[in-house]
Image: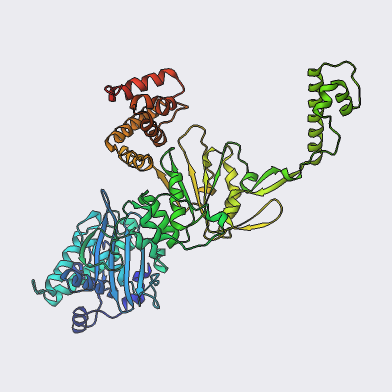
Length: 595
């Protein structure tokens, strides 16, 4: 038996008028009459018991429907089904907010007490009576939306409501019978739900000891906000305004963290124009960074989708330096941590006497003898010059090989992890060995520490933001190691921009004010991209970058068709026949007059 119906819950105080009727009828809270039992009560020895938390919840819902109770009930509707049933329920120790997913039986919630949000208390003798849960299940049983509506419960519930509102007065016996049926109905549908099938109320009972907490961030973003309100007025789960596309300038004051940096890092803070448009996906990441501990994100999508631009926008909005580390097929674990470079400062010319140009011109053989110690006799100038160069090269090679003088320098990733910053790790899907990125797992974990080759322990700054960008669908891209994916707080699969969005960005970046012309060019680029995808042309690209280059070339030449040759068509395919088809199918028919 779940905590909702344990013995102690049955001993709680009944609400009036049911308490009065029970007292006047001898104090019995259990009935063996068949009319008082739910249709789901299929045992041979039938009995139904009044459940105080259920009756308190029923009365609270009736008050809400009448417009004079505190709280609210509604749901969040998806495209074809209800995402969540939502209720707010007022109790003496605060207001409770719950959302219920009927597909998996999970309940999430919080309690607002003295203006402070906290997790729901467990259903127990020293915790909650469970009224808020029964209010939720009563509401979804009487609401005709989705498959949770229950005709038996709704019929008796509305009989009780009609009686209390004076519309259809029942006798005390009839009213108490309705109460028995409602209590028995919810009890059977919850407790025997797994065996009942249709009519069951799925509930993951382990949650009753501690329901998942709806954090302030999730409230703010409206993840669980109802979009259909049946009764009352939501205060805690109230729908928040949806994010809308805005400009970078509008976001600076909202998200800037006010950090100060030395000049060398201050120059690394991006300086994009304030009029740059910021999409809702990027705003979602910024909101998570400033309201939660989330610091690890992945942006996946085709080239030109704006992944790098968005990572710069994130850095600029936060006021952080923007670091970039680009991966390739041969990227190894070591290169993620350090760069091994020649020590140029240690390279010195050998302290030897070298023949001068004058010596060489006067007597080539003597110049060679001075360097090698062997006089070659008659020697042509060209041959002498080759021997001198060969000797110098060999001496330099032997010196470098003997000294092996290299220095180890921290990688860009490690530099970024030492301070509040945004580090964009580009093209991570190009690494041929998927396990390579696991070298960074220690930095991505809660401990945020890893060791360098010299034994130094590096600790990631808690405000370092890591953004992985990848083109997952391109040739040469590899699969990710699952341990890396699991550490990402958010993975956004970016779709290519629409023709309208590409045109807007191109107009902003190039200054071309002929929007209709640019929009037409964007449509052509989009059509060519679809052609490449459909025909699976390898070694060709056509996206936003090609559009922008086309616009720049058009501004310079004034000829749309001619400017497309080397900016769009030439990059679309390495094969002449494909380029010819693209030109004749997607360029010339649209710009015949210009041609």
